[in-house]
Length: 255
Image (cartoon, rainbow, N blue to C red; front, side, top):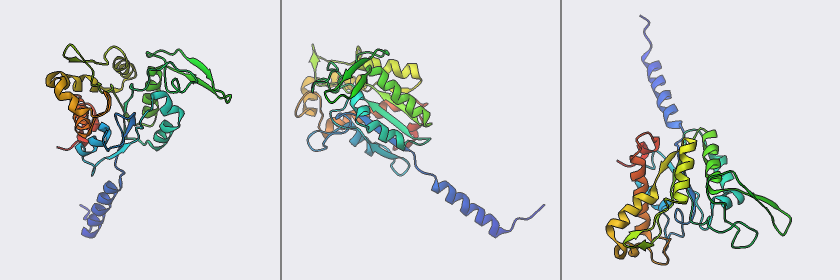
């Protein structure tokens, strides 16, 4: 038997430890609108609060969501290109859109961020006053492109349905299960991406608590939460992640 000098063994151990420590931490990138990242004063996004629920010694959290953005404008303004350029194997991207997509897409101020409804491949061609041409796609088309881009970087996409608004009918909060929440689920399933039904998870809580209790989370309007409401949604995201044991992201949550 060949005896390996103790010093050589010790050196090999040190090199192994150094190599392990030198591996970059994965990053969880968040993209979306103001319900994910807001001014963090009166109105808060759940993406700000979720950082406290992860072990940030093991994973970085990068909240790239921006108030007022739709899937279309997040791409058009170069925000997605920036995130995509930073992605590396082992990273994660959680995406939540739907609050700003509703207007008819055209070249007016109101139509600047609108998309076509549904998940199809139909398009609308626009020519802006300065001569710039733009092809507008469906909500599902943009989500699909995000998913495919993430996978191309050997990272993991997680699609989320939009948070519910503070809108009750006959004692039940209105849900997005027939439009944007449904379309997000459908595209995630078609593309083999993980899906968290954030809309349903939080809506179930709202139904249990009732309209009078829920309104304390919405200080200014029916869409944007305060810090406490943002934490409710962040906890709903975590609950959705934990419900799917195949998502590697779960192992980076605080115990």
